[in-house]
Image (cartoon, rainbow, N blue to C red):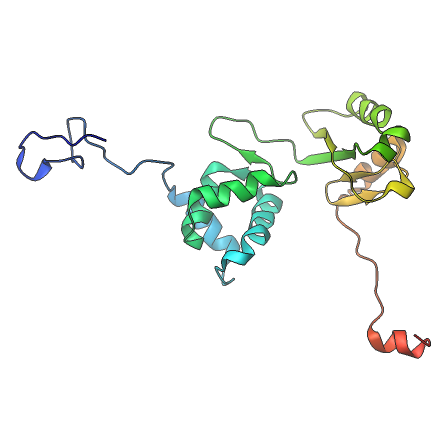
Length: 199
């Protein structure tokens, strides 16, 4: 960047307060006060440790349905990280929906159909097509997704955060009608219960 070499008193140089070619703010995406307030409210008293970045990205995704550029910038500021670091992590994982300025946010509900070999052989492509044809794209989007680790129960899909084995369009329609898009965590026994059963 070139300096403005005109001698205009206190306005000499790149940083100028008014007319001329000098910048009025730093390069890069600017921090928006509203987005920063939303991120601070969302994180509340949580520590701003770098190793919690993915957890905080999940919080933002779950709260707003996507990761806006403004929220990513605010998160970078709040965690004292560069925007590049936050953006690289957010765009690396398929489950995060990064929305830049001017882009339309995705629908509230996303269905990810596994496209691994086992699921493809079990009819995943036909399942994806049937879902795309039977659901309103303004309300639900249907995407291909990498292996979900359920090859023995193919085809597998994820509705929101809920996994469905041996998936069919009818199962998905019923789950949407019931609002069943959250992960179901089974009850697990503790170590004492395991020992009491002879483990």
